[in-house]
Length: 452
Image 1: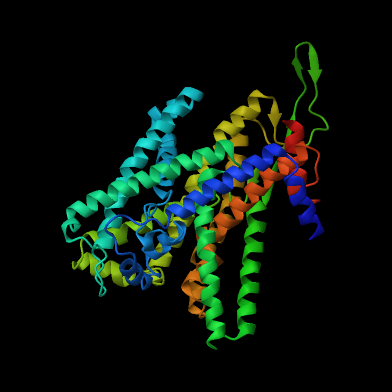
Image 2: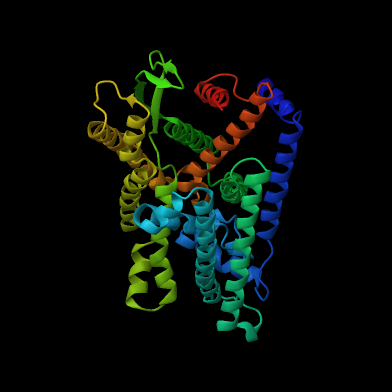
């Protein structure tokens, strides 16, 4: 506790860091306020009544990432997810289309054009998803009609709501960019993070109500909390695990001076989970499509099949979900780490892997290492993604069970560690003691700062 207190005291001694933290906090407060401002013409009580029973559906799963904004019919009901989807699409296109590859190689100018394409694509995706959300809100009829004004019902409401949802997403995209530039941490990730944390408090309150009513034994609840902490610890362990490929550099002549690679401890770091949370996000985006089809074509055979077999708790849904995660783990890792480029850059700089010849043998060796590392990493991601379903079968409430795995725990752990690293880096640069007194994470930060 004394370390934590000292670290917090040091944080507020640095004026720049203090201002960045304050700015980040204010921006996240705006995000939370926007999740309570409903679209005009919406009966919030009716929406809450109709969507509460759907907590186990994919829309209920989506609602967690927007901090409950969907169940309130809020202007931020889409959250930042369309922007993430657009970024993913553009990133994938840079790996398969020559035009996008050329833009990526054009430096700052190419990056600006890719960002513009991402923003325009975000607008299109936001409007399309906004129409789907508006249709789902309007089609709810569990005793209450969500759209109060009869003149707005139908196409007028859908167009108005989709426009407002799109504007909300664009505003969130702007807030995320401002946090990244003027605050601390990655703005987009923090917006998702604050939405998940906002759902944690009601989930804990729901669990406590079970104890108060006598439905849940307090000892059992302690075991559940201990299991959650254990899962978080394992996720931290796996996300920080690295396979190091040693690299040596031959003697080379630069500006009349001879530089020797002997004694250098250089290596290529390959994370056990290189793709991090991206495979689960990819798979989740695809798994949303059946539910959108069921919403768009109600009462049809396709809708009945999807409603019966593609709920979060259905076996078929989880098998397809796990297979997609494993596939995208390999796919995204191949995009992030291109062994051919790595081998070519090593050859140009005079580097080589001990016992491996430069060129094609080095490329094949890196490929083998990537496959061996990605196999356990992808299986772990698939297990974490479907773990909440099994936890829910043990009697844990659905909202609280979702924090045992999937994108929830990976995003919480990843964003928390990334933000902590940035704060720690500011403290180390100002020669202050941070939160991490020892350990591998602090050692890596010190080496990064020393080399920069």
